[in-house]
Length: 315
Image (cartoon, rainbow, N blue to C red; front, side, top):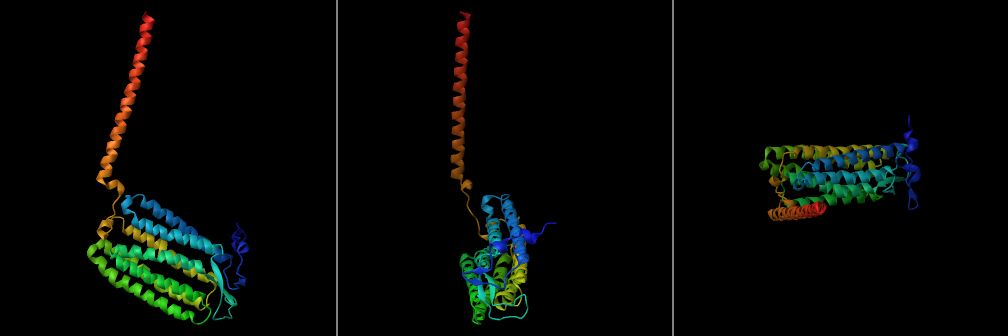
C-alpha cells in the first residue's frame, strides 16, 4: 500500500516560513492531501463543463464558460494551498491551549481570497443572468461582493481585535447580496418561465444557504483560531465543492433546454450572419469551379498527349 504521507513532499519543499516569520499553526500532510483532492475534483469538473459546452451552439455556451471558469480558478487556488504556498503567517489574536491551535502565528491563505475575488462574481453572474436581471444591478451586486471578499481578507490579515470590524462590514455586504438573491432576483425570474424559475430557485437556494456558512467558517478559522488549519481545509473545501462543482452541475442541467435569448442574452455569432454565409458559399462555389476547370484542363492535356502518341505509332 502506498504511503501517501511520504509521496506528498509539499510541506518539505515549501515550509511554513515566509518573509522571516514561521507559522506554527499550519496544515499537515493530511491537510495538503485534502487540498490536492479538491483540486482534482475542481479540475475534472472544469473539463466536464467545457465538454458539455461543445454540445451547444457557440452562442449558447455562456453558462458553460462561466461555470467552467469558476472551477478552473478554484483548482489553481487549491493546488496552491495543497503545495503549502499562497499564505502568510499572521499573529493570532486569541491564543488557545488546544495543541492543534496553540502557537503564536497562524497560516492565513490569502490565495483563497484571490480565488473568491474572481469566482464569486462569476457565480453571481450565473444566478443573476439566469434571473434575467439588468446589467446595472448585476454590476452593483458584484461590487458589493468584492467589498465582502476584500473586507474578509483584510480582517484575516489584521492581528488585533479590529479584525472583527472588517468582519461586520463583510457580513453586511453578504446580507445585501442574499437579499438580492432571495427577493429581487427570485421575483425577476418568475415571469420568464417555470423552467427558469425552477433552476434559479434550486441554485439560488443552494448558494444562499452555503454562503451563510462561510462567515461561520471565517469566525472559527482566521478570526477566532478555534479549529486547526487541517479542519479549516475540510470546512472550506466541502463548502467550495458544494458551491462550485455541485452548483455548476445543477445550473448547467437546469439550462439544458433554456434558450439564453429568453434571458436577454441573444448573442450574435459570426457564422450566423447571412452576409458571411452568402460570402462563404460564393467562395466555396468559386473554389469548386476553379478546381473543376483545372481538373478538366489536366484531363484534356492527358487526352491530347495520348492521341498524338497513338498517331505516331500508326504512322
